Length: 321
Image (cartoon, rainbow, N blue to C red; front, side):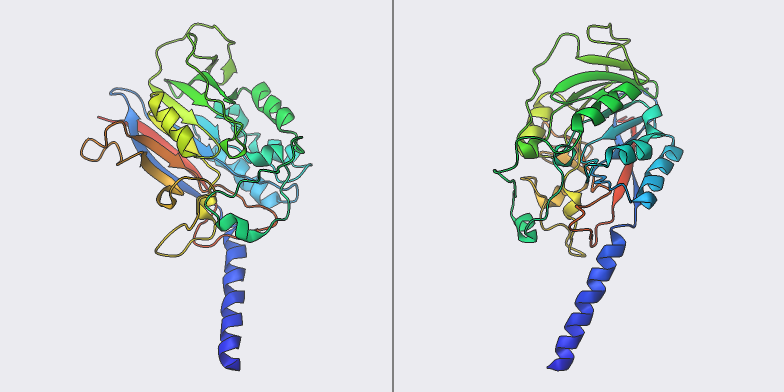
């Protein structure tokens, strides 16, 4: 009996040790998405999400800075950048090389509210939102967003924008964090919202350089209502984060939870929404591409990952023909 208990304790300790190490085993995923029209050049899109950055995480800061070496044409940041009231300078340091690249962003709950210690069992619920969340944000989301915009990134908070990157014009629609129920899907506008050209703001009402080759949806949390709205809006690609890929996964099975109402089969990676991938036998009627990032961080109170390495993703958008 004692031997069995000892083996169990050793196994648990080994698993915890591995999970702590895996949470720092950052990796770059590479996927190809055949979504551009015929004749369009390939565009390299870096999708980053869920940094949950602490000022003390120097290794993560340097790793994120090095992502500029991938030479992306466009950066999409799907939120949850900060994990501490003093994290904003560290976030801007980490992202500084990428802020020189055309980009778009939305905010997540941990851009508004500092993480707090909670019962870990809450995460195992299908949708563990906190109806009693404080009303006043405790993190400088507004200042962080202003810094991103000043650098040339487009703010997609419940709005639309147009960006030209890699020789291709993109239209975007984005929402504020659905996990906090801050999302307000923007109605179509005649001018497409804010217009950017190679990351430089042109202002509302500026003329389009050319018609967009792709309409892209961006959200922090991939709630079904938002994914459906973006699909119905004509998005050929939707990008989201929030799930941490399940964070604690079962090898050979995958995620147990997504921390929202998205099914666990699409907790991370590239999939079709709502049905089969668009390139499989013509795809399901009305189906679009959905990429969910497993993200680069965790809450500082649960700094573990298992069978789910922290990631950034380089998506190569290419012609569908």
